[in-house]
Image (cartoon, rainbow, N blue to C red; front, side):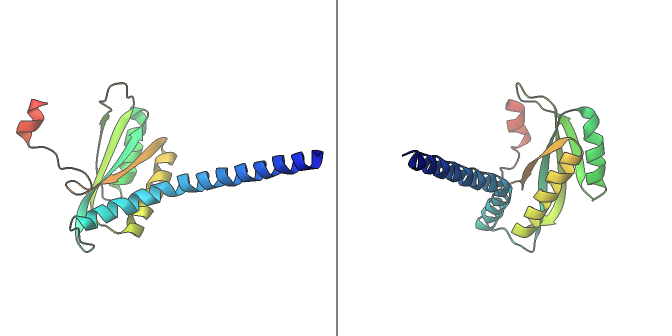
Length: 149
């Protein structure tokens, strides 16, 4: 009877370990899946693989001092960069935004995301993803509507 109990506990432990591994692999792949979904959305809305689009990349930075080194690294690659304090209630830190015209493909965007996660980590920041104005995210409202908010 003790052997049966031991086998059941061992089997449950192996099953839990396999589930944990599957969850970790899914978390690691989630960023790449997000890139694929955004590229599919772009294509579904008539996006062309041969046309460069203005791509907005977003980073979160804890302190103002961390913004400029990250911004300088992105500017060296030809990105337009700006950053500002987070404005949502309860948020702290800074939002850094980088923009560049890029031809969009799943492998290219996955490569940018992987590279930017590493670059952000080197500068004590986090990479929050990308979007394309008017395609993968709504365009900014006209000035008249922004003033009414």
